[in-house]
Image (tube, rainbow, N blue to C red):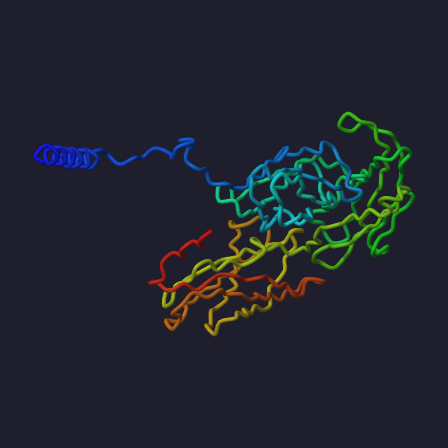
Amino acid sequence: MSLKRNLATSVLVAGVVCAMAGLAQPPHVGPPHGETGAPPTEVRGALVFEGETLDLGVVHDGGKIDVEFPFTNKGEIPIMITNVKPSCGCTDPSFEPVIQPGETSAIKVKFNPAGKHGKSLVTIKVDTDDPERPTINLSLEATVEPIVKAEPSIVQLGDLRKGETISKDVLVSGEMADFMVKFATTSDSQLVGVEVVEHAQVEMEGTMRDQSVVRVTFKGRESTGPISESILGRTNDPRRELIPIKVMGRIVGDVQVVPDRLSLGVLRPDTEFERTLRVTSRNGKPFEILESSLELDIPDAFEVEIVPLAPNEAEGPGYNIRVFGTPSADHDQRKAVRGMLHLTTDVQGEEQIDLNVYGSIRPVNDGPRTPPKK
């Protein structure tokens, strides 16, 4: 009986010791039996482009060009393209919004080189829902060669005297073989003459092009003011039958105003200012300024004084025009100032001379503007 009791006691003690030993062991952190020890990875999508920069090389500006940026979703979940935004309106994109795992697609764009000349770079921003790479920037490069090129496309005549005539040549070349300008017309044939005077083949940037010389003649005008006329050349290239050319310049009279506009600058309320213009004769003949007046878009009354130049101030007759005054103390905020200064002279054809006036009112306690956030 005592033997059985001793055996039972021994078994109980051994069980308690084993249990305590088990409690003393660190908890099991390894994988369950039969599993690997690698932690599970998060499954995600990934758009991989065949190329993120595409160079079209030399292209002509005759029409739109279809371009593709192929890519594959090499991830394990779908990727959504949320937006595609080119840096230039010359590029029209299209795309599939959702790309399944393993699926191949492309960002398709229509590149319009019209109006471009030389190197052109367009960036295309692709936004996706991939947290690892939410934005992908694609680049489209090209060197645009015009089908028809007019040099210059704007004929600058500069400042001309009343009645003065001038001729300038425009070189119009074409990419097509045997290209030529057949004829040209003007918006005002009484003022501007135009004729095609020569056809030749010339080397341009390493290639041979056919070229026509279009001669533009300004026939002169007695009235002063800006010149803005248009020429339209008609070519034998059906892809670009019409080529526009602008004619710009200005007719100046015998009266010269320097500067040719009145800048008031920054005016402070309740602070006196003075600005001066000089009016002289281009032909050296004496003249008179009969009247002057100042019209501004603020109620302040400033004065205009006509002061004849002393003999040692200029080689010919002339005047200083003083504009002065004190802005009202009531100006409590910034305001642009715009207006006109009118001069009346006794010079035939230049009886009225109008000059633009610009400036601003700025209170003394108005500090510098904070630049806008980008």
